[in-house]
Amino acid sequence: MNLDPTKKIVPLALLEAAVESILVTTANLDFPGPTVVYVNPAFERMTGWSKELILGQSPRVLQGSSTDRSIFNDLRSRLGRGETWEGRAVNYRKDGREFVMEWSIAPIRDDRGLVYQYVAVQRDVTARVETERQLERAREAVIDGLRKRELMHETFGKFIPIPIMNQVIADAGMLEPELREATVFFSDIADFATLTERMDPRAIIVLLNEYFSLVTAPIESKGGVIHQFQGDAILATFNLPLRDSRHAANAVEAALEIQDTLGTHRFSNGLTLKTRIGINTGTMVAGTVGSSGRLGYTVHGDAVNLAARIEQENKRFGTQILIAEATARQIGEAFDCRIVKTIPVRGRHQPVTVYTVM
Image (cartoon, rainbow, N blue to C red; front, side, top):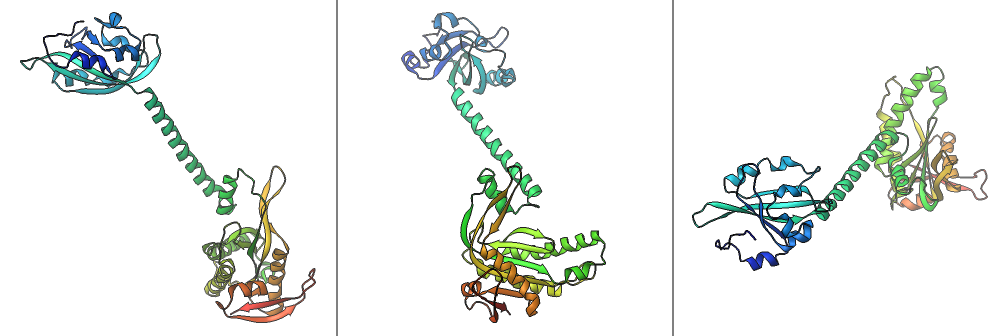
């Protein structure tokens, strides 16, 4: 062993017992560079190089094709100034297998303060680096997923309600049927056919888009989810698929806000529009329906059909908002509701009492 025993730096027994790999070289930094004068047993276990084979060789025998030598650019200058150098590089075991090693190289000085050797503490961090890579890949996957989700929101959110799309993504494309009490909201523009019979079809689309933009905001701000735009009509639900304990009250509040907004709004073509709204609360089922290649999310049930028929009754009574008795019971005295009439409804055995909201 070429470690100079006259220089009492670290007791040899401690070097031999150290868990971390330790390598000592000469201090010659000029070509061909330093040579190995000592390695401890931990070095032999980590690299596969025996002490007999490595002594007298350059530490470069640990390097190979995947070693990024640029990390050593400042090694010579730092060690030349008597400073400690640290770095991480891909190295090679005696059998050619790659591993990632962290190095800390420090000068060893003699009694006169002159550097005569360098000691390198080496750590195999391959497992840590792989974990870091896995975490980075996972982070990138999350970021990529968020970007794709944002793109889907921006693209498909114009066609599919965002809450439904989020649930579809979570459920791998298929929403299981869900039976729940909810409040259904139907609206229809009053006398729309008469208003638009002489309009250019493109102007009708512009008018509808402006109208839908106006009335969508109150519905969604109150937690409603719009399922369909049917011509000039809207079908929305409260408490499906998003849970909402105030679903009946929120549906009525959205209806009142829409009527207030339309009462003062003049559309770009100078028209004013009125809309008729029907609201009903009851048990209904929601889920995906359609063919294997094309699905839609919608709601079904007698409560849905009743809301649509109540909306049509506005025309007969000259009202703008009609709610079913079930909805009136839910909202209690929070609103000024007045009975309009108890009416028979086609397809139902029992008549229904409808209320208007002032």
